Image (cartoon, rainbow, N blue to C red; front, side, top):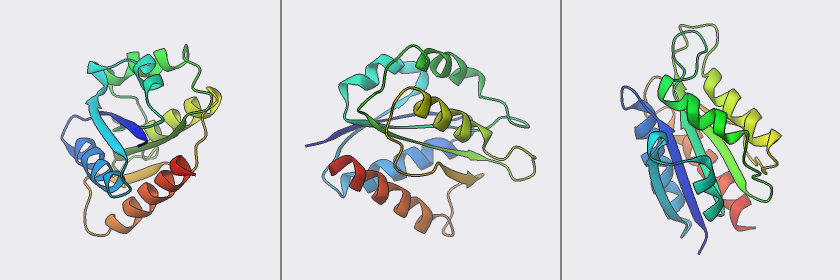
Length: 148
């Protein structure tokens, strides 16, 4: 059975909700899922898994969340070659840099040799009914790449 860790940073609960939704979706593909806040794990912990989803909210106009900065910076020291990973997060379309954290994560993953089979999932504020099809498709594409 494939194993995935979902790591996230969430201030208002929006990104945590997305993480839990994605975890439920991956379990439909018989993937074992562990979900952790970024302050409870290190990027090296991800090496024990077949893949990872990494998410965070975008603070203000394009800034990484304070509690996510250390995790993000430490990702630069880990070789993720051979892992299947993707990024997700929440943001506010009010700002010019909507969900910039998702782009930062995705770029870092690519720099570190991961297979990124699906573009980052960007959610405006909280996961609502209009977002569900995109989130389901994101999880399905990720799962299919992981299991292939």
